[in-house]
Image (tube, rainbow, N blue to C red; front, side):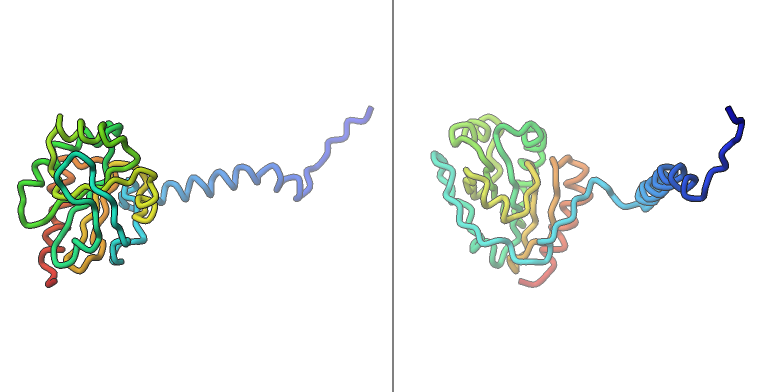
Length: 192
């Protein structure tokens, strides 16, 4: 038996160090994202500034309200909320929507996502109905056109029919005050 010690070759050193270098690179990338100050909970939408998708959804049966029709957005600021009766965060945000519905400067409409009509009616009957129009998206195809990630989501549509803002997740009094209402005020200030 020989007691020779092998000297590592440059290639062998690289193989040993490669996982460490990859880890350090990824750690640096994650750290730079954390320190960037960007809100990582904000989901960008490619539809901001573009016309709202052509939509003509039937109304929720049993309520005396029109369906969701994108032609109705022209000339007014519209808040479009995507909700479902089976969505717990939708239930949490509902008091905020009721409070927003008191502001008559804009219209509130809804896209009822993959829901049973009787459950949606019960949801609105129990919690109150802040909407002036509700379109039923039973199969979820329209939500795909709108770029919906999940429920709830809320869109601000400007007087020009373009999407001015998108909020992903439930609205809270704070997000409504600090994020949503300033976007609505901006949309209202733009001449239609």
